[in-house]
Amino acid sequence: MEVRKVERKDFYNVQSLFKDFANAAPVEYYHDPDYNVNYINKRFDYIRLAGVFLVAEHNEKIVGFLMAAPVEDVWLTDRLTMRELAWWVDPEYRSTSAGGRLFLGYQNHCEQLLQAGLIVGYTMTMLEQSPKINLQKRGMNKIESIYMRTA
Image 1 (cartoon, rainbow, N blue to C red):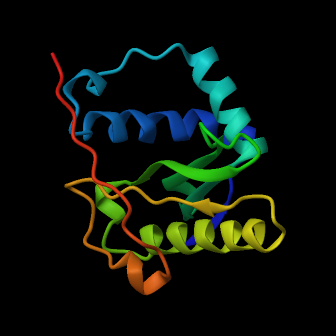
Image 2: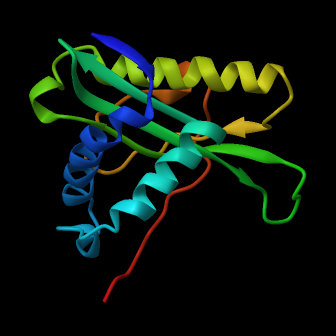
């Protein structure tokens, strides 16, 4: 299992996994998305260049991804936080090291950005269906829970 930075040539394969991620989301309107492929590729390219976009690859097949983008603070616009946007591993590969390696790659990259003073922090979202991982052991603090009402 190898974790590496995404390349543009990977976008098509990541799009398929991204749809699986959307279909598993706890928010119904994300299900069965009809994405504008050009828009998605532009977003992927922005994240690849400005944020963190990693893929897990097994036998030359992309089996997972983790993406995060820098977001400026609403009140203190000179402060950037790296926000995890999506973390997904194909269910067939969840018993492998793919998810853990993606997380560690993300954490290592963000720690370098923290040390360089380019970000003030980074986030990791844990959904209800996410694996139970103790992020506090990794130096992270729980700061909020999000509730949502949809139509």
